[in-house]
Image 1 (cartoon, rainbow, N blue to C red):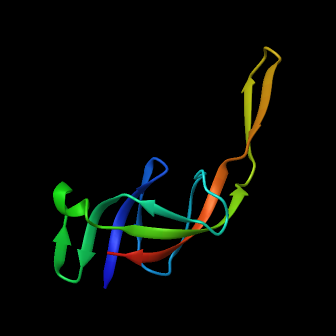
Image 2 (cartoon, rainbow, N blue to C red; image 1 turned 90 degrees about the horizontal axis):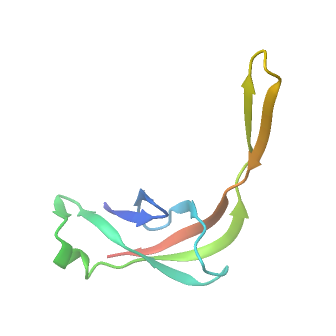
Length: 102
């Protein structure tokens, strides 16, 4: 089984061919192809972690769609002072499909 650990959107994700992964927003349009930098590559018993060998590894993904995450409601409250603050947030996300590892 071949899989790679890639750096994407400030996090690391374990991916293999055919996986659907949701990342932080990538500046690419739906239908285009992006390349993700590999941190580690596992091919059966062989593990590749050296920077010079990983420079040759390509992990390509097809951008499926740009979406927005679920709404997160932030509510701050202090007792007996009348202080309340309400704030919302929705993350900008990109859904991709891994097309090749190696």
